[in-house]
Length: 323
Ligand SMILES: C[S@@+](CC[C@H](N)C(=O)[O-])C[C@H]1O[C@@H](n2cnc3c(N)ncnc32)[C@H](O)[C@@H]1O
Image (cartoon, rainbow, N blue to C red; front, side, top):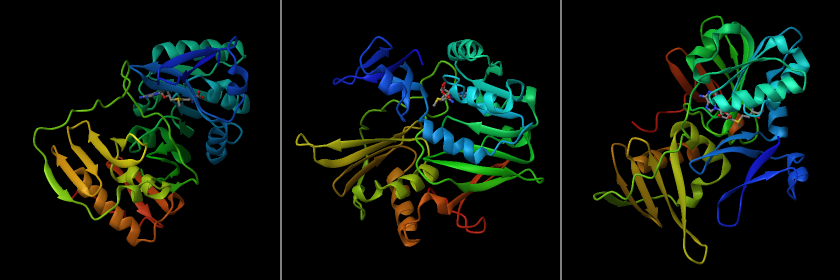
């Protein structure tokens, strides 16, 4: 990592390289470091090493396995896989051409030559299929069906889904199923080439419905509820609101379809095609009523036709909170 980006006191991203103070402690710390910023949004990073090791541990590679990595980033994870399995068993796909070029050069300078390709990881990468293992290091809201087709039956997929990392085993029947690993996951979301993936604020709507909510917005901010919401209400931007004294006063939510919600105390205003807060309330009541389950109790079943969530066993589906 020749350099990374860090926000200064004003929120501006500043490049830090080996001549700068704090560079070495940062690159050797167990922390994620931003390595690319587009439109003021971090779009690539070197993942937190302990999180990567947890995911690699769950991936459980065996000698001779062929692995597809989605999201090359710096190339560090691809280097670890190449060291363990040999470069010729490793395929890695990254959406950003420039990052691919840099990662390829770095990997090569370390003596690794995995297949490093530019592409959209949602399509997988057919050249090396079928794979024994697939690991993704950018965030997804569902499991792309192409992955299930490209990983052999009995193969393992480890992937960030919402705010968790799931480990799925591919079956003979075209379904991949498994549970969430302990611990949070805050990967950068999957994006298209040239885009930061940012969902801009749609602006305050001219008309909105107003009502009172029975939940305190602070009650949904714990890890377990935040995780559950990330599954059932994906791809929503949350912005906290605070008073000048720094006291939390509410929040704002929006989505790329123009749905908008603002909560101030117990007052909720909503606009756009979806009533986001209605879904948040349904999700909170469901989660609370099940004893506030943590992420390890959740599981996922993915098929060609979609991804669904369950609690404790595949026979207990998490309901759709938006209908
Ligand atoms: C957290 S970084 C990956 C870290 C990397 N594995 C490492 O070892 O440094 C996330 C990466 O996902 C990439 N990405 C985002 N959307 C993608 C997509 N559709 N296909 C492939 N890569 C994507 C980003 O460009 C970014 O480099």
